[in-house]
Length: 339
Image 1: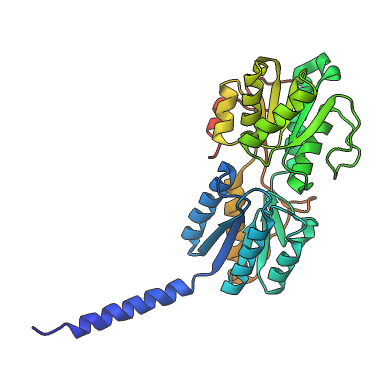
Image 2 (image 1 turned 90 degrees about the vertical axis):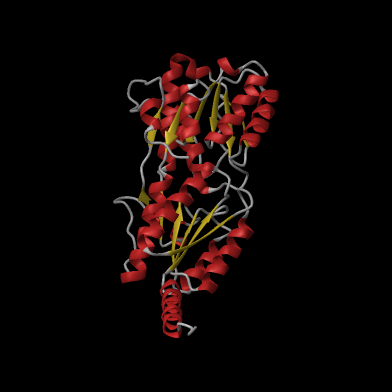
């Protein structure tokens, strides 16, 4: 029997062409803080879907934990070496990562920060993010109006992200305090306020376990806490568990930021009182689109008018609306949420 050499040659040629086509796909990178937080998992899924649609080779990386700068440095070095066209990154340490980001930009890569601004913000070509100060301010205003006259005697626990003064952490924290009517002193720094209503600050690393531990610490300082601010919804869930273990869950209001489906469901169940929803899928899709356009034409993305970043929006979710603060219910939120 004769071997079909002509057929084999065609298959080889087809395989070679496929390899060439694959190699020609522009490489872009997505570097998130972790690969466990539902927020970043959703962001990754959105980026993957958009990259596939546009014919891009998306390579994803993450830190081992929130605050892991070295893993993000290594990921950027990897992408520079691979000849990537651009990088999307949620920086774990917005200041420490800057020298490596500058190296990437000098190598010709478009660098876009997602969710968290670099310090300085100009270290990135552009940032796609929620107005995190506004998100904090919304839940602060809502809490103040919901407490009414009792707001002047509030006992507030501040459950932040870390001790590193990360830009997103600072913006949310300070926005909440301003919204509640507290003098924030330096808006770029956590913890310098002197208002006696603040029981204290503790850090959560953005996790449920961190939220539980931080809540326990602050309850030891003052068991009369009646309002809890948390950096995100996993931390809020942990705080609730700590309160429940002391039989205090019905006496304390919890507000947060994220808008993930688990958080919105927690509003329905009375675990969380209000949250400011942000849109990580939009951040990811817009970022991928921007790098795709840059790879094709060299065009760089532009900021929202009057801002130094592109604003992807925020929406207050609560089942207890108050006058003067626009919100939607958890039922509506479930049609908009992620994760």
